[in-house]
Structures are given as structure tokens and as C-alpha cells.
Length: 202
Image (cartoon, rainbow, N blue to C red):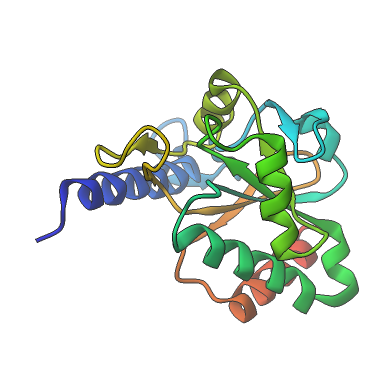
């Protein structure tokens, strides 16, 4: 049977997926059936600190697509795997990948200082930007992206794990949600989907 942690994460991911799906439809006046609205309630303003110690906001990324993943540097498997997939996908896109900015946002600001984030993101190539901040800063960003996270109940003061949803978000150059990708998406499939999304919006 799945553990309580696994169940909570699964419920959170299902809730995000339902939110995204539900936001794609509204009822026409008079009950004439559904119509696409094209907007999901994902994304929004944030102010964080990048891995070079510079304060940034969502506005600093306007003009580029953002490929956003929330995780933490002490994550044993999901986060490094997902970041490898993200950065590999952007490389596979060739010159068109220049339109995309991969972004890693920590959900563990207690341990993930700018210095820690900097050493971590350098493992994935020069394109990845890491973001951290105060607990309040991170909570605002996570809420905007409907990200679930929670400190696990095991481990000591500094060797704990974090439960969190593992969804990659693609935002357009205006900061609007385009689509999301699940953990099972590989680099080749992600590159193809990103290329299609970008070409379809131009």
C-alpha cells in the first residue's frame, strides 16, 4: 500500500492537474456548452534571490519562455533527474532552445542558500538559473504555481527530506501558463513538446 507521504503527493498532483484542466473550460451563458478560455490559474508574481545573490522578480524573465521546476538541492533522485531532463531537452532543441529559460526554485530555503544553489545548478550546465529566498518568498512563489511541499517527518535538524509535487511548468514570454509536464516525460519527448508549444504560439 502507498505511504501517507505518497498519497499526499499524489493527491496534490491530481489537484493541480484538475485545476489546470478545469481552468481550460467555462460554461457559455445560457448553457450552450463549454468554450476554451485558454487560461489556467498557474503562475504569478514572485520576488526571489538567484544563485548569484541578485534579487529578481518574475518580470526579469519577460520576453522568454520559462521552464519552471520546484525542488531542493538535497533531493535524492526526482529533482536531479528532472533538472537533467529539462536542461537536456533545451539543448536538444538547438538554436530554438535559446527562447527558453530553465528555472529551478527551491522549496527548502532553510538549507538552500544562494551559494548552495549556485554549486548545485552548475552541475546541469550554464543555462539553468536557481532561485531561493526567505521562507515567505518561497511560499508566495509556490502558492502562485500551486506547488505542494512539506518537510518530511523523519531526519534530524539538517538531514531531513522534503515532500513535494514534481511538475514542470512552461510559461510564455508574458508569464502566462502554457502547459505542464509530468515526471515521466523524457528529454526527447520534452524537447519535441516544447518545440511544438513555441511554434504553436508564434
